[in-house]
Structures are given as C-alpha cells and as structure tokens.
Image 1 (cartoon, rainbow, N blue to C red):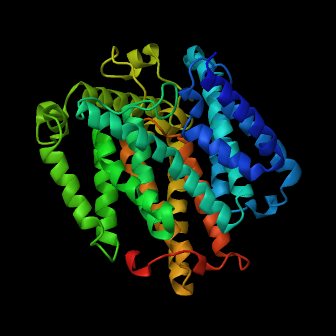
Image 2 (cartoon, rainbow, N blue to C red):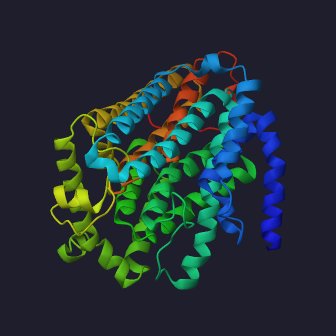
Length: 435
C-alpha cells in the first residue's frame, strides 16, 4: 500500500458520513467520483472497492431521512426518465427470458443494475439540488472534474508533440479517446458560459479551461469528437449576439489544426480523403449499425436487451460476423437494446429537455433573469455536444447526459420559484447570449 492510497482512503471514509447527513454534499461527491474517478489515480486500492456505490448508498439514505423536497421532484423531465427506466426494466425482464438472448442474461442484468444506479442518483440529484446556489455548485463541480482531465492532458500533449491520443482512466466511462472527446464537447459550453457568469479567479480559470479544451479535443484523434466540436462552436458563433469573443478562438483553432498538428492527425481528420474516412474504424461502425437495425427489425418492441452484442448474434444479423463490437452510436445502441419503443422514449426525453430549455430561456428574457437565461443556453449547447458526438459512440447511458437532464429539471423549477436568489448576484452580460 502506498501513501497516496492511504490518504485517499482516509479522506473518502471521512466524507461518507457527511454524504449521509448532508445529502447535497453526497451529490457533489457522487459527481466527482463518477466523472473524475479519483480512485483510478491511486495505485493499489483504486479498483478494490465500489466507491461510487458507497457514496450513492450514503447519499440516498441521507436524502430519504433528511431532505424534505421530494414534493418538488415533479417535472416532465423526471417523469420521462422514470418512464424510460420502467421500459428498461421491462425489456430486461422480457429479453432475459428469451432463449435467443440467454447467453447475455448475466451481462444484461449487470448493465441494468449499473444504469439503474445512474438513474436513481439522477432523481436524487433533481430532488436535493433545490436552490440556485446548489445548482451553481453542481455545475462548477462538473466543470472542475473535467477541467482536471484537461489540465492533466495539456502537458502530455505538449511533451509528446501531439503524437499520441488523449485517453481517460482505465475502466471508467471516459477511458476511450472517443469518450473523452464526447465528455469534453459537453463540457466546453459549460466552461464558456461559467466564464461569463462567474467572477474573480473562477472566471479566469473557466476561461483558460475553455481555450485549453479545444486542442485537447483535437488530440483525442476522434473524428466524432471533432464533428461535435464543430457543431458546438459553430452553433455558438451563429447564435450568440456578441461573436467577437469566439471568432479569434475559431480562427486560432483552425490555424492550429492546419499548421501545428502531426501529419497523421491531419490525414485521419481529412474527410475528403476516402481512404481515411472509410478506414477499419468506419467500416466497423457501419457493420455495427447494420447489426443494430436488423436486430431491431426482428424485435421491434423490446430489442435484445442491454449488452446484446455477441458473436452468436452478430453471425445472425451483421454483414461481417467476425467484427463484433458495441453499437458505436447512442441512437443505434438504444434501438438494438430496447427496440423502437425504447428509442422513441429516449428521443422524447431529448425533445422534452430542449423544449423546456427554450421555454426557460424565453421566460428568463421576459423577466430579465439573466442567471437563468445563461444556464439554459449553456445546457442547450452541452446537450448538442452530446447528441452530435454521441451519434458515433455507444454512450447512450452516459451518467453525464442524465445529470444534464436533471439540471434542466432543476433549472425549470428554480425559474418558477419566487424565493430564488436575486439574479443580480450573477455577473452576466446580456448581449453575449442568444436572442
């Protein structure tokens, strides 16, 4: 055992009672453990204990005993999450009793329990985060968690000259370079708008992280992440009234991509190069998408259940049976695992969140509530990053995405709450937000 391990275990164990007696602290700690995965930075004990489950147990127990805000939990977003969860439960029970999917029964139930823990904590988050200050803290902790990954990656990029891909910690939801790119695309708007909303050192820190995140996304070497980055930045450029802040950054990002990246990076990102675009990775995606579609046609209502990606099933449904992979897409993944009904419910959640964010922003403009307005725009662009990059990644059950759904529900409730904090406490420039 190393000193680093001892320090981590002591700090973690001291925090667990606080999570129980102060459930909001537990929500923040859950966010750090889920997104940053600090246990992966220790050497011998990092993988020996279910850290996230311990935090979740203490937080849920404390919330049930000490929180009195469950009556405020109601919102369409939370209701739809509950309906989606019930459909996941139905497809799991139904599909695991079919002989066709018997070989993945254990994997299906394991994944169901994993996703259920995420959805449970999303509901707890929506109940516990009941003030503007708590929402602000939650968003700052999310930004700080991924900001740490950016700070860790930038020296690696500089020292290696960008010759190698940026990865996350092994065994986490952001372990793969594509997953890191997805998460950073979702965080980029949060850095930008928090830099506008905050003041002092936080304002400077988030501004620096916004700029540093762009080359970090570049060096994930993920084409899906690059497309997501383009969608987020161009969308912000076209929507924000004050574009002077973004134009120099976009020009620098373009120049950086052309002149300061390695040759093999430019070759991989050259979408006009047919050999680069239709490489082994792209062919694998097409193969997986075809598999998902054919499986869904055979089981249109329930799909094949969680983790229905096996060699036996690929031999039946995939064009290339030897190329067994995950779905490579949030949309095709839900389609294959939960059928057309599951995909429909998943997309209804997305549409409901965007509808709410647009209504929140419109109402905030009418009342002059700039704090609510800036958060609505921030969440909207963060979700765009997820939806665009996620089209090429199998991260349909990303806890980060569901946390943003909870943030939308919280923001909508707070925007309707007359007892919210005065908006003058937030330093927001109205001209820099979309009309």
